[in-house]
Image (cartoon, rainbow, N blue to C red):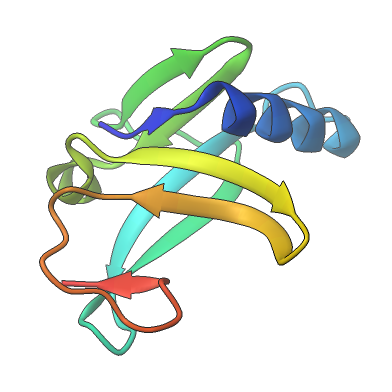
Length: 106
């Protein structure tokens, strides 16, 4: 299961609060695609499947489907805000190759 850094957890909480829908959570998924074979998806969701895997980081619930969880074991989600831009990044020790943009892996 993917872990959230404290910085990412705070940013996700801030974004969830802006949505003003208390039933939302962060869903992280791995899908086929991208220039390296697999790509990450992150979005707010309100529907859980019976076999979803859920973890809580502070006030933030993160849900991953079982197929994606295989690719996200030991991975972490971070948020950086600096002079060269702001955004979420995933550090995934399971990735053997990544593309130049950092949004796909194999």
